[in-house]
Length: 119
Length: 107
Image (cartoon, rainbow over all chains, first blue to last red; front, side, top):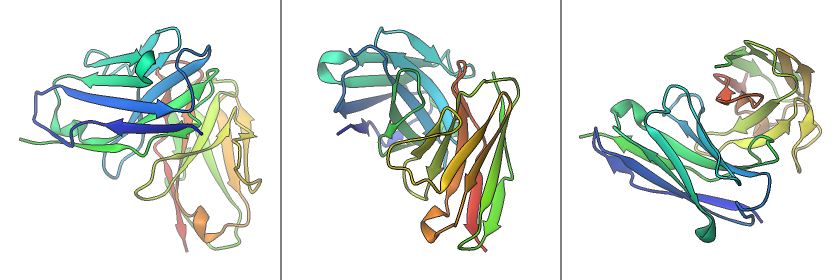
């Protein structure tokens, strides 16, 4: 059974760096074709794709956010970490991680974690 | 970036109805199109990949079609649990992009 769970601070201050961790089970990121994506959703708004890391440690980022995003993995811990620098109130959102396999779209999602940016 | 445009943005329908949601890509994406369902307070659920293939466990009342730039999601015989927001996503090229969503509510 595939499960993913996001964790991190619920509240960050403007200009701070957000660090989110996706801890998963039921699959390995060392398996050829396996990927994990981060997606976010501001309250009441649409989904926004942020970043992806694949089994070979290749990384892909949102065009508008790529200067602020860093995605990394720890295969031994079954974790993927997303860092977002210089947080702003407009970054307030629920952040999801999701599994992808063989370049297919996400087939399993975490429950999401709400991050609020406020001083 | 490839822009994904859904129509309509919102839709009212009755139980038992059949509805169709459209998704248009700003450039050709072959069949690299997915559909997701999201209910309030929940994570998205994957419905369809490769434009027309149902994810495991998704009922056949959901169907998708299209290729290139124009795609549709059709839901037949609407039931109360189908009222939700639906999103399309292209995964033809990075950065992946979502449509703005279509909210389906009960008339």
